[in-house]
Image 1 (cartoon, rainbow, N blue to C red):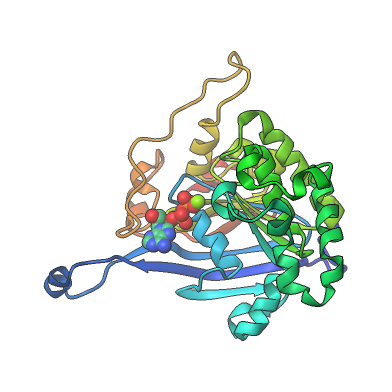
Image 2: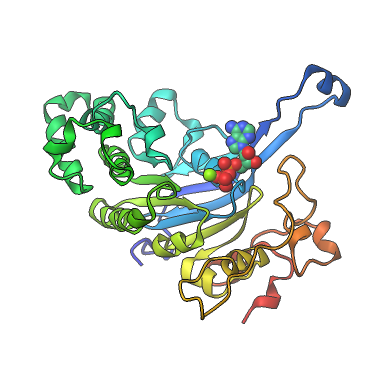
Length: 340
Ligand SMILES: Nc1ncnc2c1ncn2[C@@H]1O[C@H](COP(=O)(O)OP(=O)(O)O)[C@@H](O)[C@H]1O
Ligand SMILES: [Mg+2]
């Protein structure tokens, strides 16, 4: 694979280590007086992974599992409570504001809701051009031409037809193309895409994914692709990390994880994916019980209250990620049972 260097080590663009983000819970003065402490939502609670140069790395899991927070931490849109993020070998915490601002050119974002991420009063052309003004002000004579070029590449064609339009004048699918163009115009290395097709019409979802795959090749991009939908992940990801309550429970190459899933949670998620052929397999419901509260996560393995194979010690000892198959890691005390 191209993302493995000569000495056999993966060539990582991003390395995230023991990352945590705890949000303080707003409490009344009286509450604080009575309990004497602050509570925290442990949105991300000790996450370690790497994104290899040129791959699509997926983060999947039910809503509330901490995917978005992890993504925002990974490109330092927010500061971690603990842990480190290295981008292209540089610890982002060591950068000055100005250095981080420069680094931002190389890390761009595509959010779920294009309407919310676009300025309604800016023409599409101006909106897409924005990053050029920030990062390449000295090349202002080229901005318009570069903007038109990227518009054509994302399928907003002919670009002069779309250039002076406004977000409300185009379709949702076209709006997401604007957001993609805006992310790519600064020639980033990494694009963090957070549920980028979740709000698009079902009919254009595959088109948008295909566009993202094509642009990735053309611009040598690396993606951090966040989705709650394992079918979408299957379509686009090379490797995947499965999150549950702020932690990674399984991580590996996509085909490996889908074929030989070793964590009961991953197995449950996969069993709940709707299958196109109704005669082939029945879709199963997710295991009983709600996702527990990230303020007071279950002791030991966080999945134990919902886990079909939980034993006594699962509520006592927290499992670490272990490599049970090549490059395939799982955090479950009893995952050996699923080794084929
Ligand atoms: N800014 C915030 N302040 C307080 N709690 C937050 C904030 N952002 C996220 N959370 C909480 O952190 C947990 C993880 O959220 P999130 O990262 O958005 O998960 P996901 O993207 O997997 O749905 C949730 O319980 C969410 O309510
Ligand atoms: Mg999210």
